[in-house]
Image 1 (cartoon, rainbow, N blue to C red):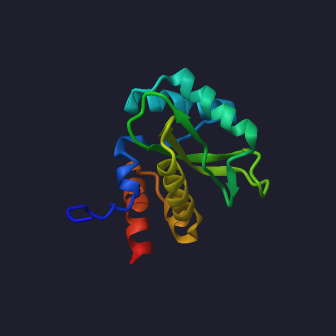
Image 2 (image 1 turned 120 degrees about the vertical axis):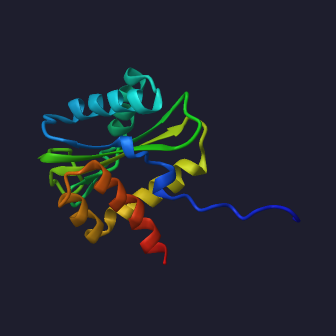
Length: 163
């Protein structure tokens, strides 16, 4: 297999644009949150907002994506995407999300994958899940209100975990 490069590991900086990190003050329901995610996905990634909301709700109906400790990882597969993309939201007021531990969530990392992404979607979900399971990372995210700083925490987390 001469001339083939090893596959570059996926990292959060390849999924999450700085402009896709937001601090939200008033999100009143999971439905409203999904609408906000759809609007952001449309503005940043050019995705259809309605299709994005529908795909998130459809996935959520299979089982809640609130993974515990105040973290939710909503995700969906969508047409019109070339690669896995993410949106990170820190909520100033935690939201009831039907999480597995019944705790409200304030850290949301939404993932959107191409409809036929296969293993890349799962790799991205595993990467984000590992990052968001780190108590130190979550503490830094909760202590910050600046989107640029939040992006920095998220993109630095994986490189320090890998070392």
